[in-house]
Image (cartoon, rainbow, N blue to C red; front, side):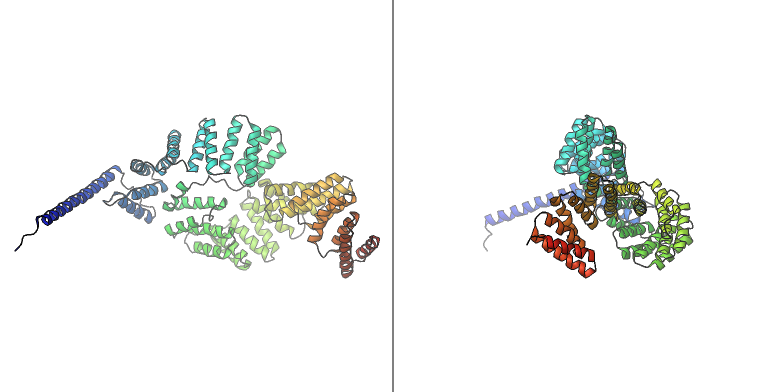
Length: 591
């Protein structure tokens, strides 16, 4: 029998030796991993007692700790554990995670940024500033860190450096109102008031709901001696949306790890009142998953769906809240509002009464009941119910507005106006009361008083129903009075002001065109008269007025077309005088 070649034997031996070394290396790596995991377990604090908290929190912490400290662990598990701790206010435990991750992944700015937030929570401003500086060194493209660093620097007197860092934020987030506001404050700190005002005016034009800009502009205007302008800016600030911190994705990603229902509902409330994202819907859905027996997230969700005009879904959420043993009064009030929006005031009344059985003398429920009664034509009952609401909520503007507006359904009265004025005394920019009083004064011919209400309405709530139209009507009334007094320049200014607010109001266009034409400014009169005819194509007067302007400018063909149209429209509508005028003007036109 022949022997195996020596070369083959040698190769096989080398393979066995290599395999042995690989096995030893693998075993050594496994031992190292086990030792590393054991060391990390010793360095991390134990999971805190979470009894009395939602059950999901204990499960999430246990899973994350296992991912972080098992033999097969990864840094992702440790990061998840830290995020859960920080989201649920276990601050020392979160800090321990971030300090370990700083050693393991030193090129990730998340960890120093989270430590900065922990320092802020603990009131250690110096440490916060240090961690923010470290963050922008590691992650210079995270713009929110630059903003917070600049704010900290300004607060601690490092004004020039804060200005540079606000500019860095702007380079990463162009047009950012927070950085622009900061730069305005830097300018004021250097007594550069014109530069500050320019910066602030830019913000209020681009982001009119950013109320800190209105407040700072009010201060600047007051220092200039412009008390009226300052008052308007303060009113705009009060009418603006609730203030919201700048978007902070790194901190906001913690929200999905939070098991504190109250905290989640607060975040959702801020999202709703600042028109942010999905208005807080996802947050509240998470709150419901965490605490399905808590009625509050259902109520908050219902309010969101009411605000985004989905009353059917709102109804479902309010009904889910009412099914809970401790349903709050707001659940019944919200259900009543949803049912009214669904055109079922009868069911809305029933929902409000059910709520009042549980929570007597609740002003929100009385308001809901009064609204349902009014929509069913039960005006006297609604007035009585709203009167009760004013007694139980004497500092709420809405209750007095509801009472006054219901009383107006019975006709103008001093008491109704007094209640509307009381609503404004409680909240000077309350848009419904401003609009109602503006209409009353317009109808009574009280032009000057109407202007006070309507101008404030248009300045502070231009998006409110009828705000633009009321501004236009008031300007028309004011211009009519000015023209009668021979103050033609004032009349023209008021008409143009009205057209800025309500360009589609036919009467404004007609009156301005006629005013200019009467002064022989026929070319200037064409745009408003052409707009008038476009807005009222079947109105004979629109064709007559425009035809006259064309005739005076020598545009014979255009004049003839308009006057022929006017003559036809007037004949068809029985306006004999207008028809006669069109005919006579046609006869004067050159062939």
